[in-house]
Length: 217
Image 1 (tube, rainbow, N blue to C red):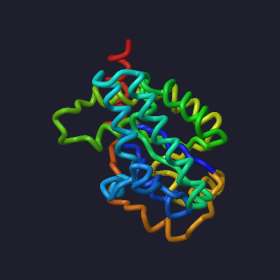
Image 2 (tube, helix red, strand yellow):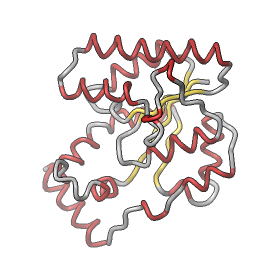
Image 3 (tube, rainbow, N blue to C red):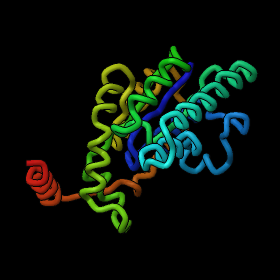
C-alpha cells in the first residue's frame, strides 16, 4: 500500500508521519533519495523542495513533473525489490494552490492505488507555532494555510484526515491509523509531546476571528 501524506506545515505533520512510520509505513532509503537529514521532520526533503521551488517560481512545471516522476518511480522499484508492504512520503508543499493539481495528478497516475492522508490544526495554532519567525507574519501564515484548503477538503473527503492535537487523546489515533491500513503500535503514543502544543485564550481566539473577518471582508 502506498501512502501520500500531504499537509500544510506546522500542523503536526511530523508527528503524524512518525506515527505512521512506527505503525509500519516504510519511508524509503538512499535509492529513493531518503537520507538521514529527512529523518528529523520525517519528510522527503527533495520532493518537498521541488514543491517549494515551484511555488517560488524557481523551477518550471516540466522540471517539477520530471522530479516527481523520478522519485515516485524510485519508490515503486524499491518497494517491489525490498518487499515493502506499506510505504509513503510526507510533503508540506504539495497542497498549496500552485502545486496541488500537479501533485495529485502525478500521485494518482504513478501510485494508484494509494491512500491520501492529511492533518488539520486550528489556524491560530499554526500562527502561534511560528511566533518569533520574523519572516512569517500572522497574515502570511493564514494566507498560506488558506491556499491549501481546497486540497485539504479533497483529501478529507476521500482519504484519512487527522486532527492535531485532538486525535492524540483517547482512542481516535488508533482508529485512524487502522483506517489508513496500518497496524497500530502502542509505542506510537509516546511520540506525542504535550509541551509542543500551543495554547491560546478565548480573547485571543475571538480577536483572531474578528481580525480574519475584517481582513477578508
